Length: 243
Image (cartoon, rainbow, N blue to C red):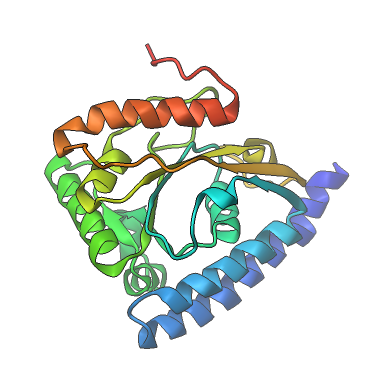
C-alpha cells in the first residue's frame, strides 16, 4: 500500500511535471532544429530524470559494441512502457523511433514527433507500412542517424514473441548493422496494463552488431530469425520459434 501511495502521490506527479517541462523545451528546440538532434538531447535528459524519480536502478552491458558516431538499426524485446526511456537514457547514439500514426494526430505531441524526426507507421495498412520502412531506411542512410524498433510489435508478457521483419528490412535497405538489445526488469517496474510505477532494477544488454553485408531485401526473414536468436541469447533464453 505504501509503495502504491508513493507511486501515485510522488512519482506520477513528478513524471507528469518532467514530461511537460522537457516536452515543451523539446518542442521549442524542434522549431529551430529540423535535424532532431537537440530534441533528442532533451529526450535523453528527460529519460534519465524519469528513471531517477521512478527509483529505477540501471545496469548496462555491452556499450563497447557500438560507436556513438555510428548508424545502426537497434532492435529490442518489448516488456513495458519503460523500455523506451531505458534505451533513450543509456544508448549514446542519435536515434529515431517508429511511432503509431495515431499519435501524430494528438495536438502538441504529433507536431513534436514530426519535427523531431520520428517516423509515423500505419500498422493496419501493409502497403503504407512498407513505404514507412523504406522511408526509415532512407533516413538512416542519408542522415546518418539510427532507428529503434521493437520487432515484437507490442509488449510481451512472457518469452520472446514472434518478430516482425521490419527491423531487418530497414537495416538491409540502409546498409547498416542490426544491433540486438535485451531488456529485463521493466515489466516489474511498470507492468503492461498498469500505470503504477514501482522502484526496481532494469537491465539493458547491447549485443554485437550483426552486419547486413551480403543480405538482400528478400533475406529479411533469415536475418529476422538470426536477430531473434541473438536477443534470446542475450536474455539467457532459448529463442524457440513461436507456435
